[in-house]
Image (cartoon, helix red, strand yellow):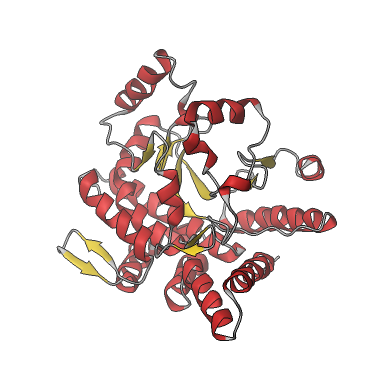
Length: 344
């Protein structure tokens, strides 16, 4: 931790549990800058971890680690969280991926947050990387959310009408002394507490760098597409949170295999068809942001499966080859270690 903190100049930090670390890119003007910075961060963590006989993986749940064996980091914020959240906090052996998109106008952040919620289940479905929990196949593609949703102030965000409405909600809890600031609001999508951005927090962590960049590019382009609509006094249809939660559950349970509800046509449609439509919707934006290749690469999540699919396949191959359960789970971890190195 000390070596990484020293070398990565504020872009690395310990996380809530001692077995977790967080890395964050600098502000990037385009996806190429993000690739360069993220590659440097992942390379450095892998190299330094190797010096200590360790290897990093980027997945939202470790295939067989037990939360009861973990300890939280001795840091004022994390000590307070452990006390406030009690037993719920101790199970937080999960990791997520956050994507910030810069939006200067506060009112626009709220307008875009309300519309972008529609696409959060789609992003989650593509990103799923947490099928196993404590050595058991949960049947879910994103078990991470099952754990995270036990915390307060999580899930899909409410639908404030304005920046003032949003601040009223947040300031009510601050004035009551329940939270210090909005960093303790952990919605799937939120206005950032520290930066002039909206912050998507729905995605599982992607094991390899190109998957990460593809999800980031999609998030950025969807936001730009909605921004264009709003500037024309148009907007994406805003549906009730109850309906969007059904798609969120389907993404959490099935990943890309069973499709999501298209509320416009009132049908459950294959994820491949929905992704093709999204790629078409944001074509102009991907061109403008110079990330066409990364957006179109999202089809790999359909063609080759999500990380959750690949983890299950690796486990099943190992079992079919005669390995016992523990050895098969270790083969999944070895695959995740190898995937972390791809593109570095």
